[in-house]
Amino acid sequence: MTRLFVLVLLFHINGMALAGPAFEGCYTRVDDIADFSSGQVSSATSWIRISKGNPGGYQIKGVIVGANFHVCHLVPEEGAELDSKISGNNLVFSYKDISFDMNCKLVLTLNDEILQVQDENYHCKRLFACGTRVSLNGISLRPGGRECE
Image 1: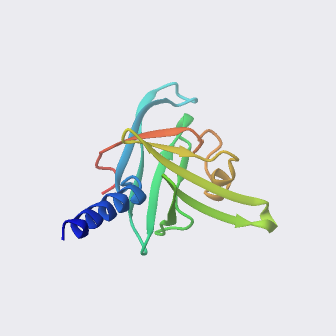
Image 2: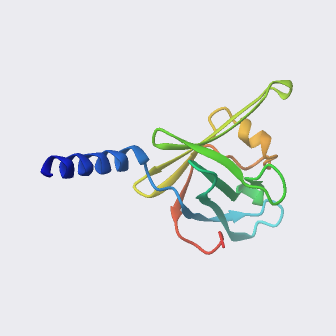
């Protein structure tokens, strides 16, 4: 009986380790942004919401604001969300289209509860038709905020 308990406990602990980080939640970032035409500075909030999707998957939705208030909507079309999968300790959204030379791989990583976003080849920026002065690569957001509701 003791062996069975130990095996169940080890399986449970090992299963938790394999599950990786808990990505679900709202992550935000507030930046003071200058309007290049008027010179006025205002605050703008970038946000990403991650929720459980299909079995083993997650849904991502968000808005990233860059310089001069250029915006990047993290949705392939109005009202949709990005289907993504866990890969190691990362959450990954991928989209490939050879005819448009598109190989988008958006990688989200949690480090000490900070969500870090990578779009190393900048193809995801093209996929989401992001404004010229906004980048997805290197963005960091903190947990919390009401923008995701």
